[in-house]
Length: 375
Image 1 (cartoon, rainbow, N blue to C red):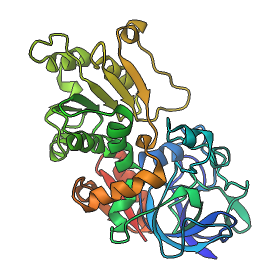
Image 2 (image 1 turned 180 degrees about the vertical axis):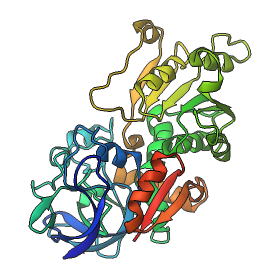
Image 3 (image 1 turned 30 degrees about the vertical axis):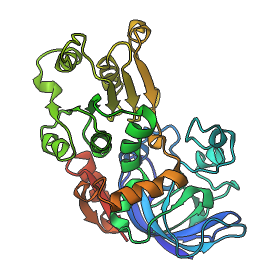
């Protein structure tokens, strides 16, 4: 069949909107009509050429929502008409990682997914007979896409596609980092570095849990109002501190008899290795945890003095907020529908597919929290 898609022809080039060919679902696969898709920094990371796994030509996009329109042989958990969110982190519930209950990083299709292919080693997309690669197992920048059934989460059919598509990455990553990875407790102190789409969701996750002091750190003063909108209690612009940002934050978090300072939990949402170090060293000695969410460029490394680790700080990373896709994503949709978390204010721009490059420009310029393409 034919489908309209925004194709990444090569790194650093604008996406090209065109009609492409899409084969139907094979064994264990479903076809989804994508109704809405968010434009995420990870898409830009790949499009820029910084992603070591980036393959071209490809159909990017991994933050979508839609309806199952066809199922392949052997599919038992999904049916036509199901409202779903594609999962770039699947949940097979059978691989050693899923069975361990220690991680959400399912390995069932990881090898082929990283190669831009379906589990059988082929692609469902092509144009003029030339293969197009899939992206993160999702390719939501196409009006129709094919995914393994283990990589789609069935969700509340009353939920609006143009809002819940954001749960396919940004919302789940931010809120999940708080709840699943850090396991923040009520009354905790926290610092969030970078108040973009991920950082704001970390903040609302902290608010949901009942954290006490929530400090947002960003070089853009316009983000202060955004942070406060979602639960931030204090804002710091590192460029206005006039000294060492780490010491400044440590001093801010000294409370009562605790004259050591440092946050119980810190979160890097920037992808900057320099900021990752600042976040780590702003954590409280003895028990502070620092969670890395942002993705750094290929070949970059993090560093700190061993003393920072010996004195009890913990460095953690998280992918997809530690969420198990088919299990946790439907719950987060339900939280949104019940008003426990907010999404609507973060959808700052709605675009048509032909305007998708404008969405990338808005993101690069810091003028959007999340742009959503509605098909």
